[in-house]
Length: 330
Image 1 (tube, rainbow, N blue to C red):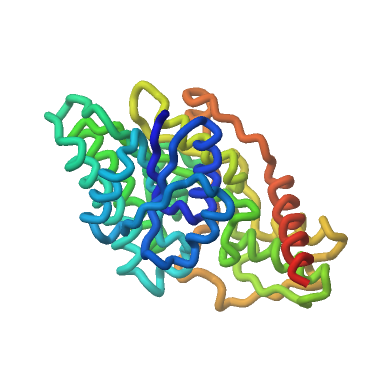
Image 2 (cartoon, rainbow, N blue to C red):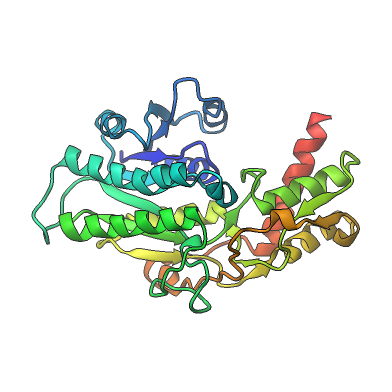
């Protein structure tokens, strides 16, 4: 039985990945910050077979302890200060958790399994780093592939670039089996309500049920490459099953605007988004990212990864899930 340790296990991706690995016969451990973390109940309810270990990406000693406790074959570093808008308000914390956190985990793995001579593969723990399309920022080309230059436009994006490059550095310096998955936007019913696609789906449900009247959004013309998180965690797993470690862009290969998300979501319940959405300049980013679109050719050809849920079906899935949630609360 393989063993996996997941940081960020309480998040959307962490829960999807936990379910998937358990289905594959893994023993799954989840890293959780704080003994009384209120998010622990979410994991215990949705994926009760995950064994929780305490640890913090800002504390390397706790990471070493978690690795010694889990004795994993694979580590998936999904934890981060992941809400981009918040990273301007807390840039230092974002850098510490999202950037240096990856370094601390890599160093913890190296200490636990022992270092190796440069150029020789270190046996033992395989490492996955959750890189992000936000690293491309003001993209130098469309679509973006593994060879596209990074131009991050937020403290979050900058921190992710550091984590990405330090992962590659440890792979090249110590022979670690370390991979980076450059995942483009991916959502689902488990997405946090602060993210725009979930903000829209939840508002649509509440407006349809008569609980709210309107929704305030920022840049409606910003374009992203959206897919379903349940599909994307399978790509993470596939990366660590290859003979050689490498980095992969994961996305749908098509971009859609925030306005399109709103159009599909509102029309799904028979409403016109223009009658309910207000635009507020206060919700625009200090440095906007206008267009992100993946070139997932490598992931599809090398990994054999193919997403199953379309963009349109993703939006409708989220609206239906929020309708059910909001109705059950009444």
